[in-house]
Length: 408
Image (cartoon, rainbow, N blue to C red; front, top):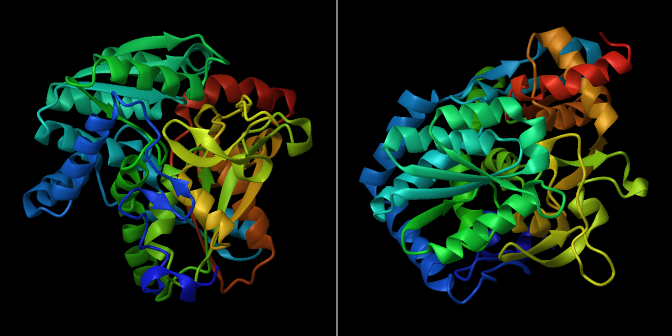
């Protein structure tokens, strides 16, 4: 599809009123949940442009999250690659250590306006759970976080942070005990508690209005980056790169640039390699289907049963992707690539050694592709990569693997 075929000649005029991004998105939920979903949608539509709501959001973005986050020229990695200038949008410097809090603050303010005091969340790497527990402590809300048993084991520091902040952690043992299963249980719990609870979804997935709403709250990343790169370089970047699980950090960076002449690359988790089947690359190795209230690309077998995703990164270990990404993939606006566990570990190590920045495993995937792309570009060209999380949470999992690789 060319830009000329799009409504108002824009990639940004999505979704439709019924939550569709092309053939993707929508509201595929239980009948008992539909009234609450519609209530969330109507409340968000009303509040998002109200001056008082925007002012509250901007206050917490500045004084609590610590925005704007810096746009940092990664000089040593740029020199190492010998090509394009590499900039990091440093959302790992946000309060709680990742981009997740941008969205949580927005949804929590919405929940308060709707009169809700009890919050449900799901989490994989734990960063969304930590952000939710943090904001619930700030706003005096009850917090229940659903987390797969496998992720509880590999993300212990974040589990401890959530507990200290007052959240109740609900272990999920079904399936592989990872993010998909946590989201399944959270949705079931919401159906049973629809009148009293608000579900803060952490990524650009789920039923409408969540993909749009999460994207809108995360778009502060790209809006800042656009202003910052023009100030630093007097031009827009040539490429944007971000990692993708569900895809909220990526949509946050990408969305403000969709109508600009900027190449965009999303990086999926290639796990142990696409041919092995042990990966979390829904666009690369999946096909359209319905999961968690929306139609999107999913890892599934020939019978339409969901295949368990795999990644060394808990935050990318999800068998689907946000519906807006599916649409942007199909129309060719964004190029989606993959990065294996091993490549991400190499990038994790290099970033720590060369820049003194320990990245989360999630953006380490994006960094590998960023370095590969930079090597093919000229020194006058510019890449912005979203450094969407810090790596403290991953050290217990990463250090033994780096030792085996002979890095330490």
